[in-house]
Each structure stands twice: as C-alpha cells, then as structure tokens.
Length: 123
Image 1 (cartoon, rainbow, N blue to C red):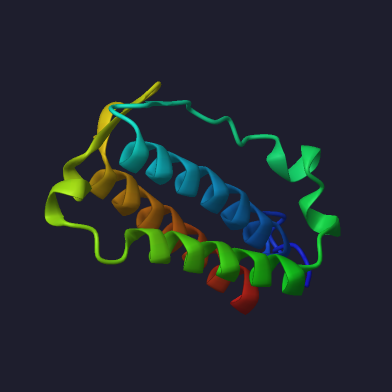
Image 2 (image 1 turned 180 degrees about the vertical axis):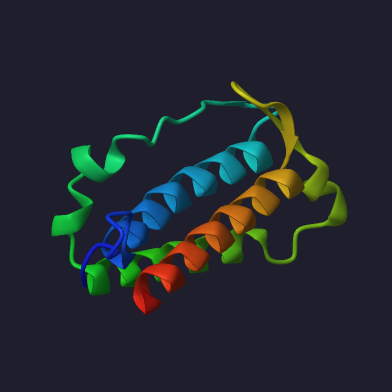
C-alpha cells in the first residue's frame, strides 16, 4: 500500500492512525464508565505519523489490531443501561462530554478517515 497520490495520507497511514485513536477512545470510555467525571486529556496527533513511523507498519497487521480493539470497545458498550450513556468526563479541550458524545465523535472520526482512504484508493 502506498501513500495517496496527492501526497496526503494513504491507507498505510490511516490504519495506524485509527488504531492509535481507538486505544485512546477505549480508555476514555472505560474511565467514564468506571470513574466519576474523570479528566480526559486532549491528544496532539499532528506528529504521530512521523514519530510512530506509520509508513513502516504492516497494514494487514494494523487492520487486525484495529479490529480486535473495536471488538473490545463494542463488548464494553454492549448492553449498557441508558443512563450509562449520559455519564460524563471532563475533556481538557472540550469540557464536559458524555459517553454518548464521545462515541459519536469516534464514529465521525472513523467516517472522515474512511472517506479519506477511499479517496486515496481511487485516485
């Protein structure tokens, strides 16, 4: 897999990026469910592709890791009572967020990068 033809991220960078954020979102969700209004630290991912050398990571392995991590997150969220979705955490950049909003953000993040991956594949 190659970077995008336009010089932007290709699938080779997008998969590790999604995997790394999956770990963060899992920990944030876990904290919200287990603690009372935990502090959720903002993350600066602007250099992760370089610092973590995304281009050298095996995309097949990275996709498998991402899949396993998503299964773990879904298992944690499955069968939660409605009031659990309203539990909150204090995000250092966004203020108070509910578990529901946090998971909505994760879905939006996935959607954005899946669209980016499709663009990279067809260009």
